[in-house]
Image 1 (cartoon, helix red, strand yellow):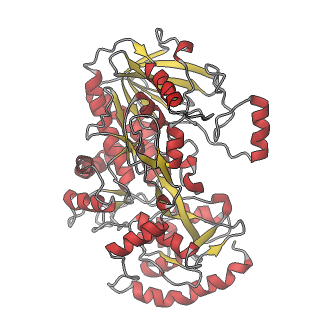
Image 2: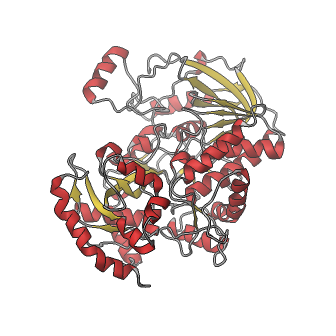
Image 3: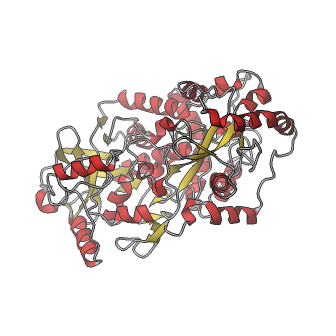
Length: 569
């Protein structure tokens, strides 16, 4: 239910709807799309990445001297939970073929393919429960060139253009060429795609796409795919072991510099466990819960960039960590769900972004970074936003116009999750617009990989959002769901082939000691201990009492203590 003071703005939205509906029924765009110069201007002027303090050089590690997102540079210039003289690596607690760090879509796909194609045993170590990941939260769809008028080369060109031509071509080729096979693989496992009456796959537009390419499962695609993958993983307990509430805190190398496993932390028992693995796959997802630039986030609770830190300390290079994606339509009201993802599929179906006067101010399907920047400009520069009771700003997203375009019941059927979500707060999206504002959504960069998901460290593979290069500096809608399936499969395939041949040497944590020496040499004085693991939303006065009670805590983390490194934990 909206506050009374918003009634006048809501009236204007309803008043302009008939005119906007007539325009939407024509073949012309409802608002002129931006040209290249206009896109550059709105990005440079209003995208959060371009603020004066948004980036700084990192002072240690493989990317030393490169300018990264400030919060990421802080994360990389931090201490480890561990010291090698406190950890006995001679007697591992777990031995396996593949250690997969992260229990989302990429991790499950990797384990399944390693099992199906190579008969490999995998351990999936996950911070929360299996499936507690951004993969579960995807809503709008997955891109794949399956329509008659589409093709992988067209998909390739759209993805390259959407990434500002910064993408690694070999990764985009793998993404787009594997896509149709992924659709079939998922359907064979049990994913139920939305289909037309004739049985063909239903496809819709997304921002930055030149063809209708978005496959969907209403607005439950993440839950549908993730549940299907989880069920298949659980069907094979003989070859796939799942360790829940057991995040990794440090990678292990052998004396030849190959990845040899990781140290896990049991959140329940507060024990550290040593895992020796012939190959290791990082699928830890993104960093939304770091709340870059103070933005609300669409991400799940455990998204704290753990894989970046561990891979970086082990010597893997990062790519495009100066770029962050903000989804244009995160919920701005009600505040209880601030940041909640409102799928781009809403705009693909005809939903329109409007200012406080009920007027269109941007083409609804610009690429995400352009659209988000235009929202920020409208609120912060043109004073066209609506302020919420807590002081947030937002613009209207006119969803009721979709039923008028496609027929009554379209919204309730195709956006069922959104309909139910907002009804909890007495807002009926079939009758009223919703307030939205850009929300921290995706980690554009990550650990640099090739098309086999290999890093610069032998035996270390990365897939999904933790990797960098496939999306360049801006990801188009639907390519993340495809990404974690394509590269999850590839990581499992190539890691398993590597594991079948490798002979590991003695495990070591020398890279951790080298990192600590580099921090000291650079004169970096920090109390930050990473991985962060879990964010804290306790008020500052509560956190101050927690510090007094427990000693120096990991800033931004829970009260988790490091028993092996008490001076930092």
